[in-house]
Length: 327
Ligand SMILES: Nc1ncnc2c1ncn2[C@@H]1O[C@H](COP(=O)(O)OP(=O)(O)O)[C@@H](O)[C@H]1O
Ligand SMILES: [Mg+2]
Image 1: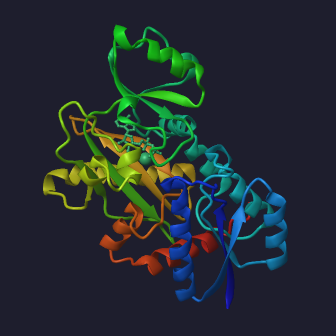
Image 2: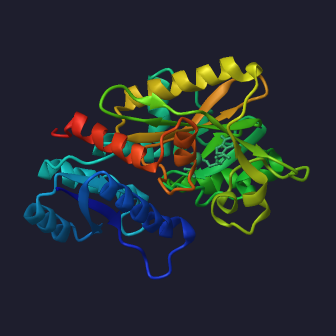
């Protein structure tokens, strides 16, 4: 029987739901790995890397399923887990350390989108935030966070004289940046790797229903994690489209695949888009390690194309072996 390790981050003493989610993913992956003929055990990754290093060196697993999302609660350190696995030359799932780092730093990722010719909303960071910025709608976002951490309705604002003070706060805080707010629709495109070519899964649109006037149509923290909230209930994932959306969907798929290739992503990824009123798509971000919980968008999209949880895990493993990850 092949040996696998499921690597996850240590959970803090009082975890928020987004942090706890990794346990749900580990449980589901564990079951699927068994069905795929692996004996698997969990290992934890934290700042004390020596323990993981020694454990993996001794065990010599055939593959590591890397589910590490943060290290000591910090997104900035996410690349350390694949870096360690690259040093040990153990095949592992998902993206390599460099694409994981670049995609997790939202500003760095956006610069790369531009290099690749991919559309992304205009953004302002540090010194580029000045009082001379055009009036309009903007959103303040954390550079490193994921899962809408730090994003509330208050993050969206209209820039005019009355709100100009907000610029100074963002300018001085290198963990935040400003982005042009794209009024319009929201889409997710999931892509899964495999032995051969990556497969683009059926696109999903998040539709915002019954939002009161003035409430921004965004996925804030509550929409993703607070099951009792208005936002959670009223931001609903849909997979049904009419022919009118066919050319837009083709564009979204094309951009996602270009980004997959341009970033050298591996295993699985999800691309988040906004589409403005002129039907122009803008890539917000790429999630190189999207959530794999059974109820997550990635798994729902895979299900629409007939891939069950085990088949998803099988493809992600096949991708890990195909890339061989010896750098
Ligand atoms: N430029 C933008 N215009 C409109 N909505 C945005 C913009 N940036 C973010 N949002 C909203 O905030 C959500 C979270 O932002 P995103 O950049 O995807 O970060 P996260 O990693 O937290 O998911 C998006 O799903 C979207 O609803
Ligand atoms: Mg997102």
